[in-house]
Image (cartoon, rainbow, N blue to C red; front, top):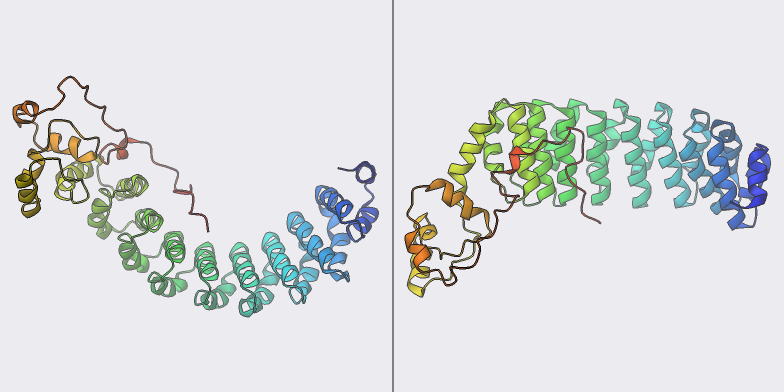
Length: 367
């Protein structure tokens, strides 16, 4: 921070700092903005006056500062800024109103759902979710049908934050959205709302091709507490993604299923689907036979060198008494040490401590 700004901050000279934010030296203005943000509530109203500055860049900076201050005394000037001709001012004002979380901003923010700029619509939608006022639901339902996927995802999340059962039907329809992040938002929202009417949509999302959607669907089904989800969750417990298996395991525990029961069920069903496993390097006749009969006999004819895939351990669990003499006889390198079992096998995953219900299952993919 520049010495001049530091001295003004020590003197609590808000007026001088505000003047620097509106000055021509933009580098000095940024330092002044940081100083004002650190002053808290006493700086809120003076900074809000900058929302009427003739320069858009100053108005933008004022909105940024006000978002950090989150003062209820700035609601009216921020609402007025929602009509600013500069799209960035409108977006930043909407974000600031979300931080303030005052119900007086619901109707004005709802008016931005029809803004021509996508970023403004998204900011207004997210702000309505942060305010969490049920009167915002009609505007959010409109946003759920927006042409842009980011706005639709924000609307789904906001409806979950507000948590009204009236939104479940629309969220259920949005479960078929073409964008995976929208479907993820739907899965999260239905879990937060916790209404049994969301069961069918969540059960369908549990089979989604996107791993993040399946994670949240499994978690939300556990929150709903509907025993009809047990069968689908047992299938999800054999998912190829570790985090999906973890969430399915935690959901099954929430539904009162004993861990030994769903671990046993997984060990019985998992070997039936080794379709993704590579074909063992056997003779052509064996490969042809495996192609015709993809059932467990193909597993018995694998070479002696044990693969590091989950099916190796699972097959051993399923046929503990099987004689290993034939594979050992054909081993090309009997002196090579057997590789250790992988710690991430599906049947080992449920033994790990489950994550907290409010924790994020995984980091979302970058846009």
